[in-house]
Picture 1 (cartoon, rainbow, N blue to C red):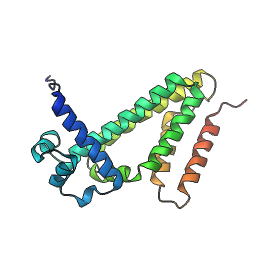
Picture 2 (cartoon, rainbow, N blue to C red; picture 1 turned 45 degrees about the vertical axis):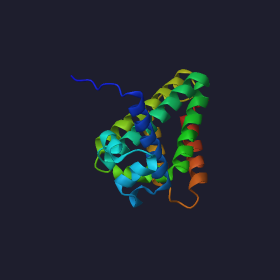
Picture 3 (cartoon, one colour; picture 1 turned 90 degrees about the vertical axis):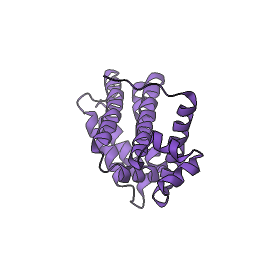
Picture 4 (cartoon, rainbow, N blue to C red; picture 1 turned 180 degrees about the vertical axis):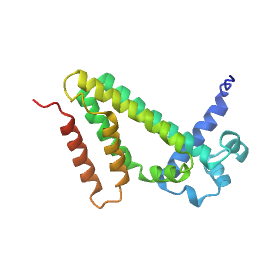
Length: 189
């Protein structure tokens, strides 16, 4: 098994700059208006640097997607470590809705670019589902939520919220749905 050599500091910085600029452009929904070579200029790097790190748009999208998933999973772990379990779960679900709302362009761009990379999307979905499962399990151990609801059901609700983003009253309805999910998870008294 071969392991990748760690990147030099300057190469790591360039890679991080490319990912940050991609995230910004994806979020604005402007990525498809650019030639890939133009993207290098906007990121302040040479085209060789762009292609060395990301030979295709899809490779760049995959890196952005992995970064988004990692950030959300890290957020879930921090919430679990710092808040009571039920509060951590509720906060994380609301953070997910906030993220969907704030980054609609990012989600659409990634979905388009990665349509042929279902394995990568599934892997990220599994990582997020594990973060939700950990939060649900902690809240169940504390007796705050039922222990007979699978985290997959919660993920289905989150996916449904994301898929319905075009509804005119989406934000209020999304918040209402999270409230329904949390009420449904609550252990009966």
